[in-house]
Length: 327
Image (cartoon, rainbow, N blue to C red; front, side, top):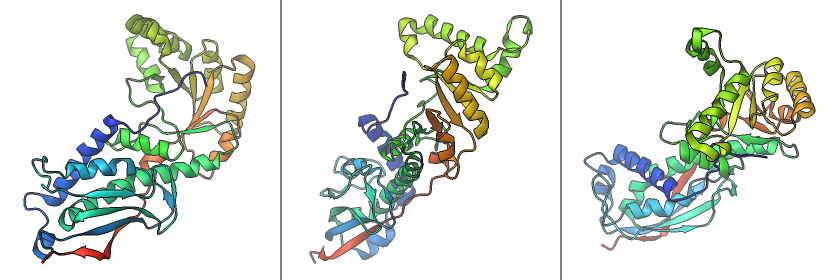
């Protein structure tokens, strides 16, 4: 693997993204009046412990944010968030871990009212990320033993991209470009638009011309640092592949090619420029991904990892023996 996109790890920037989404989630639940049901029925000083439990098998993603979530419910909180203190989290599982149905993820301890306030936003966010991690793991397992790695795409939920890409990593997948800023990816629409923008309007850019023009742009804007930026181009015919291999882009995306074409594309690449990595994309699902991997491509990108994942089901169960109403 010659060059690689940025690969997500849990850090302060991701934590801030999580907290921004948490603020919105809490506002959706509490509005301007707070939790009317809990305030009516649960004494202010009531305390207890509640377990977060997986209701189905899957892969955990988002546990790294739970401590920050509880810290957000602190005496220094302002605005819509409740002002409470004393919530504690004891973890029993960590991101990337395979979960069994009924498995304990961890325990919340403290005042009952804030536990109930944070319950649904926390479980929703854990469920969303863990669903992505779980689906990713299925794809990763499906290509085990081949040279192919599973990559995500930019088909993410607006505002959630960094977190969803982190979840893909928890599932064992790899991250494609974070955004348009990170790499050059020349697609068919770029080539078509070139017909309108070239001098004298003399036809569109050929795939090879587009690669060379992108490299020139990177050199002029970034100097030597531009050499480290990935240049990838999408092709949908073997003839286009032959053209671009001559100018050696870092990656070639093989768009919506059948298995026979993928086999031939790998053979041509191996014969002409083995350093160029091939990425298969388009219409690939769990029933076909193994056969695509066996063609010899290095990368398989799957939009479904993020746009079609079903949330993993989590629940919060009170430990009734630990409740203290201090009445």
